[in-house]
Length: 213
View 1 (cartoon, rainbow, N blue to C red):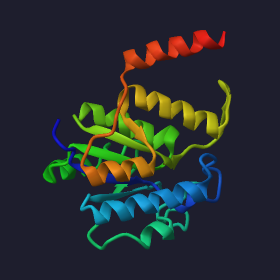
View 2: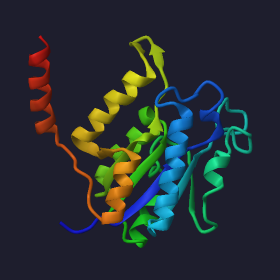
View 3: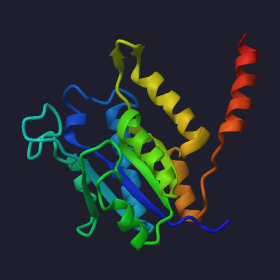
């Protein structure tokens, strides 16, 4: 197997995820933010291209309004970015939808994108699914991403339950899920991260369910 040619895609680590209706609930915001910063530092040291994505809504929007304080990238992330970092503005959940990111990745020879940032249950999930159609391998950093708690007409789920469930879902088909420490080791060794598949995950899930009955 050839070594992966990675790019780290930092998704919407914007201030509105730290204060307001979309406050990340799990993992703890300070921990996931520190891991995002660590991932950027290791990517930079390992010559892995870094992409910083911001979600942008119109100026009257309740979150991510263009030019607002909440729209800004968190200062801890800005502090470790190099001047030549690739910046992307998006208007849809997927980082690839109506942006030039896929073409830019192709121009760099990238075949594997590593997703860090927010939210697990929106932008990260949509981007991982979209990448499949683009022929890109996806990695997701479980401790450098995060989810919110949700409640609506369909029910209620905590941020922890949602994040954990989506990590299992992503690992079963769309992405290789790993911690930031596991990813940095893989970057250093230029090795791919282990990934399951839908059949193996379904069989393991059936077995696990049977033992709990």
